[in-house]
Length: 92
Image (cartoon, rainbow, N blue to C red; front, side):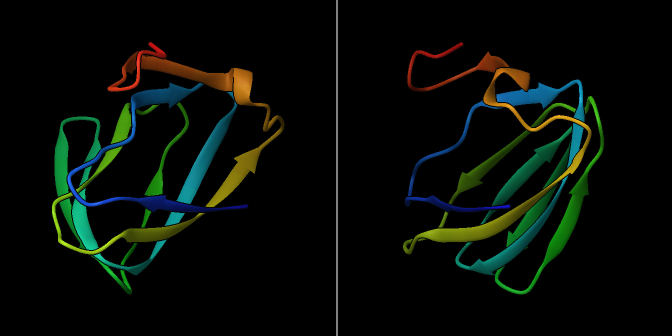
């Protein structure tokens, strides 16, 4: 389980996982989640699932930090299970 904070105007890498799915519960803020071909607006109180192998990313379009809890489900949770497709911080 992780607590993730996305600052205003920032976004996480477009990524997928081969060995885990995720459940995200948004605590505060607002943003936009990319899940496969879907674009899903989110805000505090919302929850959604990221299926195994699905491309996903979250962006903060608000003026306050976007905070969510990520619950990982699967048989392996190592950081080397992250396949980054695009990354604003040069990790792809």
